[in-house]
Image 1 (cartoon, rainbow, N blue to C red):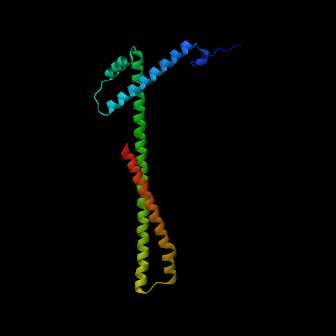
Image 2: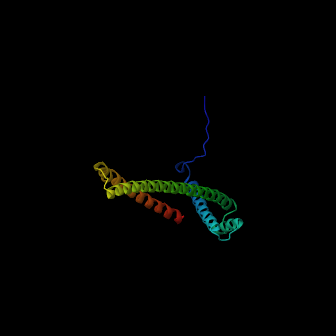
Image 3: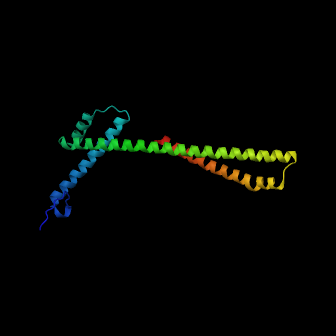
Length: 172
């Protein structure tokens, strides 16, 4: 039993040189027009007044083709531009969520630091009153102060991450 298959693919080495070069030239022309249409759409998005039919006419005049290529490129560029815009919005939303998480971590660490400060202050007050024991002193020196130091270092690194996120976000 024979099976017949059909494919949209073609291979340049199977074509005549004339046909292969014509297809390559058309693809290069299409990609160039697509790039130019995308550039016009980005200018239009930045506030430069350009009508969609003017882009079509400009491409048609610039490349000297019929309406098919410019319109096709314009539609493709519009869909690419819309997809890029949606991807950019999604990326901004993710950056906001990351920034929010970082700020929450910083707040948690600062709360822990303030609790440790209160505990250390209680031990210092105990020392001033002359009621400090050896266990209190060891707890202060071996547990509380190193933990506070580690939290401050972590808080500082989180703050620098936050600043980097804000800078990258503002660049966009």
